[in-house]
Image 1: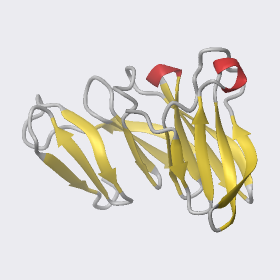
Image 2 (image 1 turned 180 degrees about the vertical axis):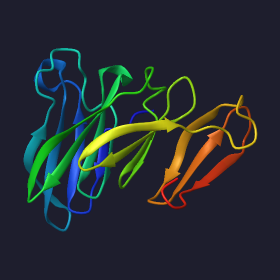
Image 3 (image 1 turned 180 degrees about the horizontal axis):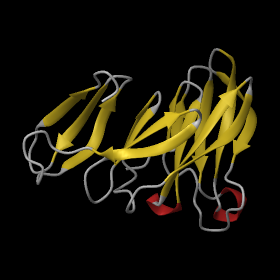
Image 4 (image 1 turned 135 degrees about the vertical axis):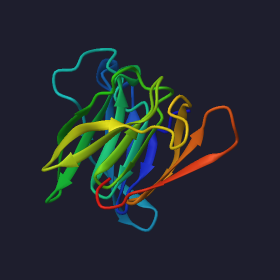
Length: 173
């Protein structure tokens, strides 16, 4: 299920796939007092055309917005620095995302496609594909969507069961 609204610490990000003749956009509203938000800007991907569908799913962390586009073919990153939003690049999985499932926290994102989650890390403002997350005891068993994520931990579902797996970051791995 897609989530087109995400709440940052002082802003609101709303995905709008119909904006710009269905190229899509993420509308940013800044907090202007308790419960009041005012429009600031639209986040778009330059050079896109009708059917790109940016904003189908939106998630935020700090001053970064990640938004799914093109039916799950890419996740687009935007970052705010000195009160200005700019495009930071695309995270492109090996195959189409499965139901727009992805987890994101800080400098790490996991995109779920038809295989196991693919890990992306942000270094020096660039998002790079790092690898694939595999089941800890059975590499043939598929890991499902991220359930929750923070800066050091990731909880994912286990295929074919009601179990959840907890991964914790230790020393960068």
